Amino acid sequence: MTPVPGGAVELRDDRRDTRWRTELAPFLLGTYPVTRDLHRAVTGTGPTPDPAAGGAAPLTNISWLEAIELCDLLSARAGLGQAYSRDARTGEVAWDRTSDGYRLPTEAEWQYACKAGTSGYRYGEIDDIAWYADNSDGRPHDVGGKKPNPWGLHDMLGNVWEWCWDLYDEEVYGSYRIFRGGGWAESARGCGASVRRRSHPTFAIDDLGLRLARTVQGVRTA
Image 1 (cartoon, rainbow, N blue to C red):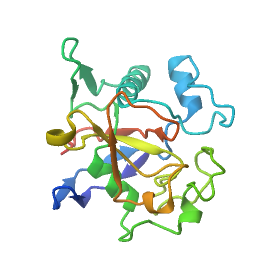
Image 2 (spheres, rainbow, N blue to C red; image 1 turned 90 degrees about the vertical axis):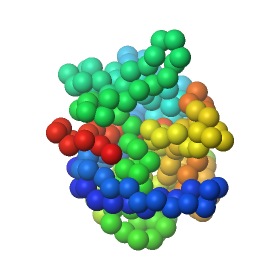
Image 3 (tube, rainbow, N blue to C red; image 1 turned 90 degrees about the horizontal axis):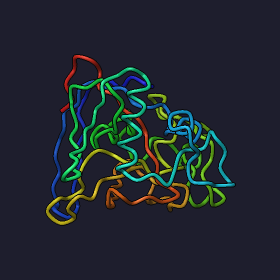
Image 4 (spheres, rainbow, N blue to C red; image 1 turned 45 degrees about the vertical axis):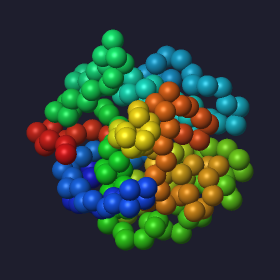
């Protein structure tokens, strides 16, 4: 995992026409999206068959709820505290923000890490940094095949969308969760640091995966 320094990021909600600034503590973020090989090593089973994708390709067809479960499995395997618990009656997921276990990044953490101190829509020329509709040949590619951002994070844009912890807009969309980054089937315009998408936590598709985060021990996440 890659250490990400603390800092601040500005986010926006176009529906509400609002912007807000979030202060972030240092945290750890996966250098790459979770791969099919990592999923197999943790669960003992292969992900949804995809003859076009090898083990180093990003894991796809995983829902937000399955992503949460995978984070807890990884934490248990590593001897870390589990970040999440799920109410057996309501199904609601709670996050223990003091846990040092694996978790999904918040939307603010994801955007901050993606931009990596840059100020543009992307951190580089799109064909140099991302697999997207114009260059992906209609499939995901092994992680790390494109140039990283200035903080050494690969595939933050393109290849697969990545689930985040946050609700999108509870007032309008209820339990829908956010995903970020654009995927191999996305147009160039959809692969930008500020692009926000959402879906139901049970939703899974072939260009949506996840990236792991961890809270730095002793530093509380906002």
